[in-house]
Image (tube, rainbow, N blue to C red; front, side, top):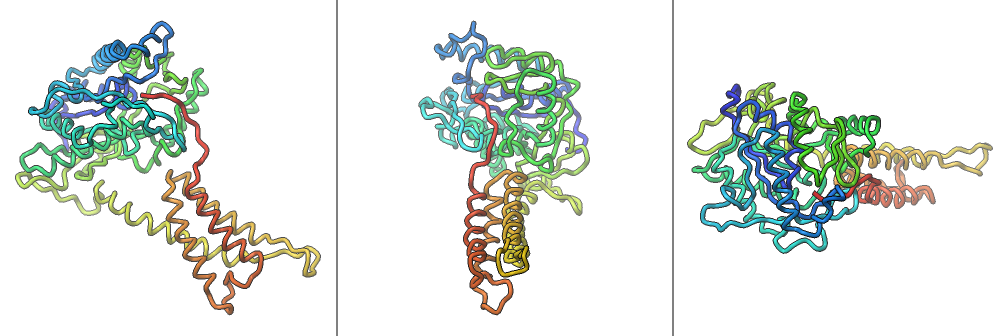
Length: 454
């Protein structure tokens, strides 16, 4: 798809609630709509369990049908501001298999859990999206894919951006629909599937700007809900559509406060109207064939596997496909982290028994080697938790630590680096180090979080 005409592009955006299309990808939607591309926005629920900001509209929280209608109207106005003419409700007209009756999904609600990541609400409705069969939701999305025949699809990442159960379901169902399309030789094969991301450097800049230039608190920006910059495949410059994005935000009177170039959610957290929107290719069936892929969701991407009736493209030498990158990452990362644990433990075990005798006599002694070794051992584990944003990162490291300590503890007493037989310091190093690394690998880290429910 290198060099495709803008008017020939077809892009499908799949979101969970009204306002998500604007907050997560409004600038990109406006960009492609302005280019003349066919843009379809698919929304899964009406967001009936969201909070209402204006006091004059608070009554809507107690009248779900009225609230649903209000949010439908808000979305209709917002997508019009973004230039969209094709919006669909999941399970509604043109958003379900032909032999399935019309149906709708309800907002599932949410509550905050450990680590600043949202969890399902205890009292979600019976027809909540998060409670629906995954296959059913995926088949509804697949029906839209076969009608629209998009080149690119956009949705959330695996945690739905911040863990909202509806976002997670939309991600899972969209991923399944994308994969299902490639299993059917007769079906349309979308080339790319993108997840909207929040890269850490951009989030930090936005947080600083928000504190400096508005009365709002920044959006939650813990490691759990952001990603390292290196995971970004495509950045879309949406600055030319600043005013359109802002006007679309203003359409959501019940959900957003817009003041100047900044907006806030019902919990008072927010940020600036975005200048760039960021994406990671998660479909694994395309590779970046040209620099255009760094700034476009269609141009610059070429398929690497397809149906029998389509042409197979061979990536140029040195090209790394997103699918291969995921495989390499999933296999090599644990191995490298285990080896890192082995290396750090090997080095620190040599020094853990070092002591300082300030008087030159046998006592008192200061076990500086034990202190420095424990700090180094745990410091690496903490750095992995913070940088890689996951407990498994430190867990694999802990495996390397545990294995190495076990080997040293079982070494013959003639070995200089053994742990057994070295007294109190040795036992603190062995059991204290192993326990501390294990706890640090799984313990929740401090976080900042809000309470936005949609």
